[in-house]
Amino acid sequence: MDQENKEQLKQIAESLQDISKSLNRDPKAEFYHSETHCPSCGRFVGTETRCPYCQTETQKRLSIRVFKVISVLISTLGLAMLLFYARHVQTAKVNINELTPLTNFAHVRIVGYADKDATMNQWGTLSFNVIQYYDKSGKLVTDKQKFKDSERKEIRVTAYKKVAELVNDADKPRAGEEVEVEGQVRVQQNVASLLVNAPEHIRAIYDEKKPRKPLGKGYAQAGNKVDTNIPPTKVEEITEKLIKKNVKVLGSVKSVLSVENDCAIIRLENGSENGLPVFVPSVSKKKLALPQNGTKVEVFGTVENYTNPQTNTTELEISLKKPYEYIKVLPNN
Image (cartoon, rainbow, N blue to C red; front, side, top):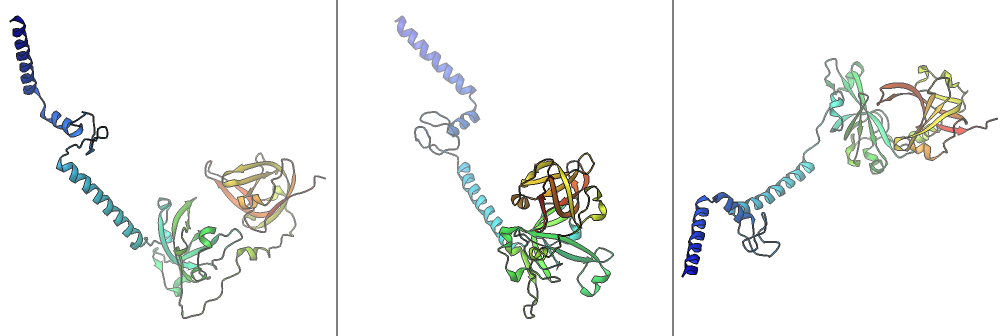
């Protein structure tokens, strides 16, 4: 009898505990548990409609199922809108005087006049300047008869080899022709330029009924006519008066430094602490062996002003960017 009484008392105590738990239960916590845990194995399954552990189907609220469907539909609609925008909405048209450092890397469209025939150089790069004219109030002038009395502004347009090779000759503007270009703005030292990334983004505007003059032979061929047999200039005599002029110098190598983009800076002794820098681009660097320190060299290039963006200092340099410019080692005797 005592054992039976103990069992009954135990059952009564457990019933009272269950009643107490039911009175203190949190309906929200239980609802969350039932929505996120498997009813069979009790493991957490989140928003899955089938338990990944025991493959039991889990019941979800209608709102969750609807939300999953709506999210897919909205994503698909968003992608369709982006595709429509990319194919049908035209790039914003701007004027050259509107380009500032704040427009760096912007994708824009410019209409103006080509300063020369758009031809490729020996590296396969196509480049020319686009010119626009403005009156005293800064308004764009489109009447050619008023160009002489207007302010001229220009921007450098460049298309690298892979793009330039795909540009149709009919879309390459001739000198003085109207042209529409589209590309990415690059601002360096407050000077804006335009990089074209697609062949269809260069388009010459002309009257198809009128004959057009043939394209020029290109900068590479014209460059071969430059006379390199000029008297040499002393390294220490390179001054600002020679900027943008071709010079030939004989000097001794002070240092050789490889820099970014596979280019090189060769400094010549000129009596100063740093020496006179000679900039050798990657294309020219591949065609010659860099000289050693102390080697005597002959350099034929263009004098330019170079501003170091890191130190904001400016110094003169000789650039070897053009096809006829060179550097060669001389005998030490």
